[in-house]
Image 1: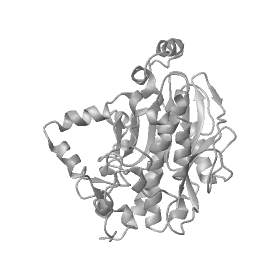
Image 2: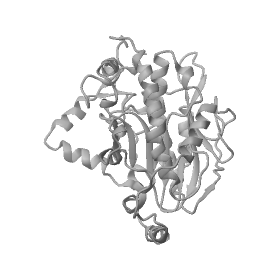
Image 3: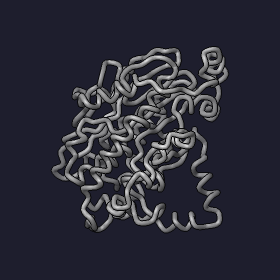
Amino acid sequence: MSHLRARPKPESSLRRKNSNSSLASSTTSDQKSRDGKSAKYRSPSYETVLATKGSFMAESDLEVTDLSKGWCQKLLYEKQKTPKDTFFKDDRFRTACQKLQSKNESRVIQGISRLIVPSAEGLATNGAKDLENLVESVNESWRSSLAFCGPLPQPDYAVGFARSAFSNTQLEKLAPFIGEVPNLCNSYFLATFYMHFPFLTCEVKCGASALDIADRQNAHSMTLAVRAVAELFKFVGREEEINREILAFSISHDHRSVRIFTALDGKEKWTAYHFTRNVYDIWRPNHLSRVCSAIDDIPFRVDLGVSQPDPGSQSNVPSFTEGDDIQVTQASLVASVEVTPNSSFTEQTKQSKQAKQTISNMAKKVRIMQIANY
């Protein structure tokens, strides 16, 4: 289990962060062109690369649990209050979408993204006190995580748990895995130094075939998100509890359509907003309780052995399917469906080859991304 031990960041990286120019250099890194950060995801072959590492964007033959199916139904059909006087108002919606045609991703984000994926921190500020243990990142590299396949993800928007979501005892038990001091270590359980166990990402795109690129970016981010929970439960010997359960969500959208991962069915332009609010309000407390219960089972002063050096490249990072005598025995899930602002769902038919074990689609309209773990 030594691979789970927090890994000190390279000294060169820490020196840059402590220098007078650290803020500028960090900002430059995170604000690099959106075209640049999505370059490696443009080719469909990236899905094959993910598959060789144990993460699959494909339909499958196995069923997710009835519990996960029930969650998805509830998340899609439970109604939430929606913002008033927005671009999604009936008499403005068509015009707003037309004005976003041929615009770049930044303009699409400015125009409608928070109406599709509401800000968790914004909702907390406006009175949703139950969400105060959530944190979000915007176009920020997950530089406190550990690489899975190439450079670290940098989602347009992401949500995970703040340190305040965990008790002092739980943080003490997590210390060998995440480090004693924030921002000094890389960890399977971190995205940014302030975000633990991320569970939602959003990617925004524009142009032909852009949502396929967004899907691949989300697949990469969600692989790391699900890996965190899978590694935690494996460590405490409870991996069967998350077998075939849905552990993360992602949304891809442009000015015309939205693809929601782990959704089943739905209509109308506010579907994504209702769904995301329900993830925050309904699914999130159960997920946090599940994660905390596993943390509670970690022994005090656990010995993880000698930590591995910073991998530096993906070739040194253990994948979900590597290892002597390792058998893939379960799969943790992220599933997808597309919803358009014109109140229709379109079936995702894209197929890809699968290896080892796969997971089934939850309904005929759903494509599931499998993340195999051992």
